[in-house]
Amino acid sequence: MSTTIASAAKPIINADTTYYDVNTGLYMLKGNVYIEVSNRIITAGQAKVSLNSLEVWGSDGITLTQDNISLTAGSVYVYGSQKKAVLDGGVTFKQPDLTISADTADFNWRTKLGTFNGNVQITQGDKKWSADSVTYNIITNTLQ
Image (cartoon, rainbow, N blue to C red; front, side, top):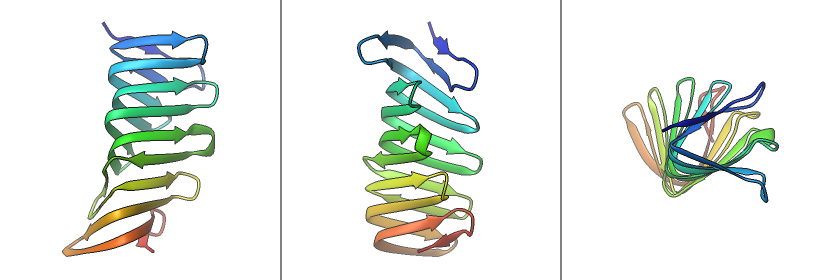
């Protein structure tokens, strides 16, 4: 049976199993984890969520989607109040006509910058290349 947690101005949280740990103040989620904040959706096999700080620790097949952006990774740590995410365990970023894969990535929704590090592979249109690190600006659609 699925459990859903929701309140005003807080994320929508759904998982097969939900447990609230009163000692840590964290929701412990397992199985088909779904977290929605505004138009940003995170799915995972398991996660821990702090509703107070809007922090999310997720693992086991992470997807993060917003508008036409899609990110997948092995794990994610979301700093909700800072509008920032750190992804690890093999990251793939997809947007129409652009794919970036890397070992790790930092994504900032305030600055609209995604920084990808380690074994970076970029495919943009018909072009493919590698780099140690690359930063992508979503607003200007440019790589740095």
